[in-house]
Each structure stands twice: as structure tokens, then as C-alpha cells.
Image: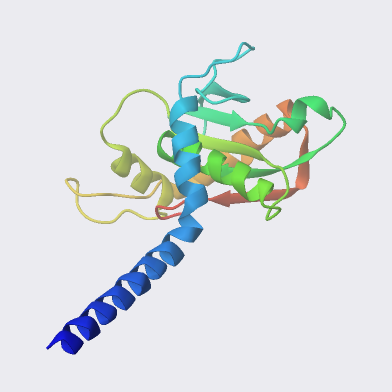
Length: 196
């Protein structure tokens, strides 16, 4: 009876150690993300002086922009790395993202962390966000990103993608390249909803 109890305890103890190691290995890749989110939380309220309003993180700014192609108002959120100010002759790759109202802070933190790990070069981040207050972000995003209309008048529709991507190519990119030191041969456009 005593031997069975010891065996059960040893088996339970080994399972507990195994579970702890599995959890540690599972959390290991997310440690940097967790630390980044805590760091980001404390820096949300920071503001710097400059020509345009700041977004709440260092080295960032907001520009209001009305598109001739889409007829919509946007906010163009930009962030530059610390070296941008220290190295005035250097040009930087640019990452353009959509849904800046949701993703700007997270992507900025991810960029800083990946640069610190040596995974990517320093870049300028540009996020396109909707200007003003609206609760219909998905309806607007669907219109902007789908090339044809789908559904009926009450459901999500598309059809605005040609104008929206013309807005990015003919208005946003030239705005950024005119106002920032960018490497024009190194651009990336990405997002997580439907535009890839």
C-alpha cells in the first residue's frame, strides 16, 4: 500500500514537472510580447512636441488627410526609430499598414522588438486610420478592400478597392516620401483583415 502511494506521488510529481516545463516552453516565445505590452501600456500617455499632433508613443505623429480618390478622411499615423533623428543622412525602409486605429501601437512595439533581436532593419512605420469617430469600421474596411460589391444593402459591401489602393499609391506614398527620408526601393504593405 505504501509503495503504491509513493509510486502515485512520484508519478504525480513527474507529471507536474512535465506540465511546468511544457508551460514554460509554451510561454517562452511570448515573453517578449508580454513585456512589450506592459511597456506599451505605460507609454500610451507620452506626447512629444512637434509640427503635428503625436499619437501617444515617442517619435510618432498624426496627419489628417482627405483623399481625392476615395472621398474619405483618414489619419496617417507615422513612427520613426530613434536613429532617424541621430542619423540625418540615412534612408529607411517603410512598412505601411491599414487599420492603424487598432494596429499602430502593436506593430510599432513589434518592430522595435524585432529590430532589437536583429530580425529586421530599422524602419519607418506608416499606418492608415479612419478619421473621425465611427462604429462602422468593418463596413468601411470591406468597401475599401474588396474590388466588387458583395451582399445586399444591409450586409457588408465592397467595390472601393481600386480607389483605395490608388489613394495609397498616389497620395499616401508620395506624402511619406516627400516628408521622410525613405528608401524608395524598400516598401511593404500589410494588414491582418482582408488585404493581406
